[in-house]
Every structure is written in C-alpha cells, then in structure tokens.
Image (cartoon, rainbow, N blue to C red; front, side, top):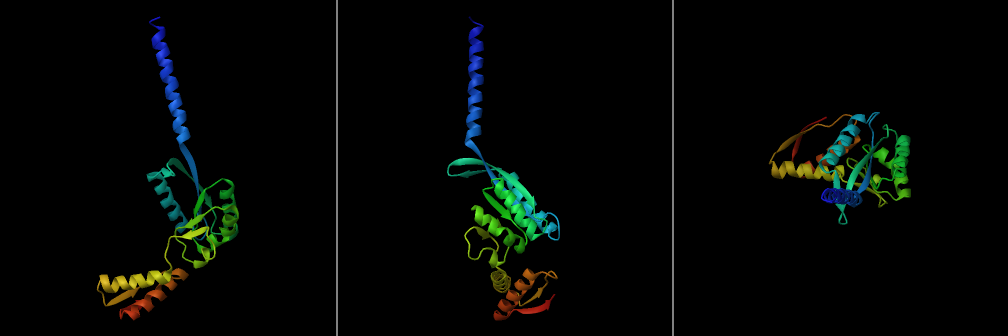
Length: 202
C-alpha cells in the first residue's frame, strides 16, 4: 500500500501537468501575418531589407495581446518578384492561408496590384514604405505609415532652418527615383519660403 500511494500521486501530478499544458496551448492562439515583399527582381534589395525588419520585430515580440488574450505571431512570407501580376497572385495565396493582416509591399505599384484582392477578402494591409496616395485613397483596407513627400519636404526644410539654424543646404537624391524627385521638389519650395539657400541639386 505504501508503494501504491506514491505511484498514484505521481500519476496525478503527470495528469495535472498535462492538463496545464493543454490549457496553455488553448490560451496561446495563433495570429498569422502575411508579408508581401519583392525578394527577387528589381526591388529585391529594398524588399529584403523590409522583410528582415519584419522578421526582427517578430523575434523580439513573438506574441501579442489582443482583447485580453495572447496570440503567437506566425509570419507567412511571399515573394511578389517585383511584378504586379505576381503580386496579385501572392496576395491571393496569403488570403487563402488565413492571414489576418498583410504587411507590404515595397513599391507602390505592387501594393496597388494586390489591393483589390485584399478588399474582396476583407483583409487589411499595411505598407511600410509606400507613399503614393493612390494606395490608400478611397478605401478603408489599405494603410500607409509613411508621410507623403510634400509633407516630408516641408518638415525637413523647417528642421534645417529652425532647429539646425543653417542658412544653406546641399540636396542629393537617388537618380531615377520618382519619390526622391518629389521630395526634392517639396523641400525646395519650403526652403525658398524660409529663405534657405540651396547650394546644389543632383
């Protein structure tokens, strides 16, 4: 009898631990987040950088609290190959995989190409680097976190004049970048209004 009691206690402990494990699994739910980025093609470098940033965020914060419940974040990454047609196809795959939200894409035309897919499925999407108002205009499912070039230019000119107290500035932009050109245009306009002299443009 003395030997049976410890065995019963041990079995009870094991059953309790198993029940706790099951409860923990039930309490930690899964939140699947889609990542739509150009990992190949002409935007591969930029898309890879954004993807690495998202993965790092997932490593530092693998779980989130929503409505008092804990969710484990799982990333599903799809390469849109810097191509609008493939971007729409990759978006559909993320929707079918049950992603609750999608992050991406680098390249406004790639985001625009996938927009209708997300709208039809009722899945929200967030572009981290997109600045084209067309991506978010007239809809409530696509979001931008980056300010428009016109706003950025005005803020930068004001910062240079009022905070840095400079009287002149040099402007360098990436050749062939429409976004950089728009930013330079807005910066020039704001700088002239603040009597900030521009020494060089490129």
